[in-house]
Amino acid sequence: MTTRLYAHASTAAAVLLTIAACYAAAIDAGRPAFGSLYMAVFFTWRARVCHTQARHERAVEQRLKRLTDRPEPVEPPSPCCSFWRHSDGEVHGPDCTRPTAARTTLTPEEEAAFAVLEAAFHRAGGAA
Image (cartoon, rainbow, N blue to C red):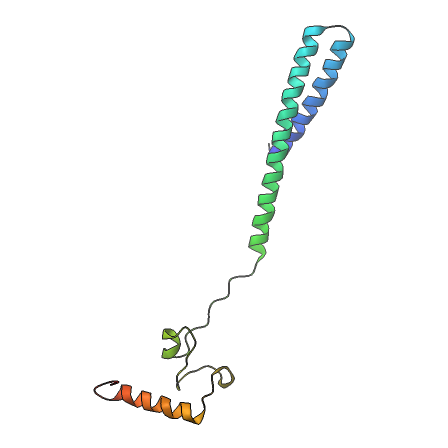
């Protein structure tokens, strides 16, 4: 049985025991009236606990369903050049495979400075 069925069964038992306690009090049977009333209070408490648990289970179920309805996570783009791997995508080299519109365009002065730096790294001694 599910928690929801236990909650409904406990509610029904609480209602029936309350009716039994009222009937026992009407015919002047004190002990059965108190016993039925005590059990009705117990089943009322149990019904409340089961209803709360059933609502919690339903909320968790709905959350899990919403999580599985989402599309697959998007893979990050593959590195387009060696500069991209080491500069967090900020700087791109001349052999970059990214589309031209996505690259940063350099002014002629910046291109000349870049060529000087590139030449310094390709020399035997490296950058000095």
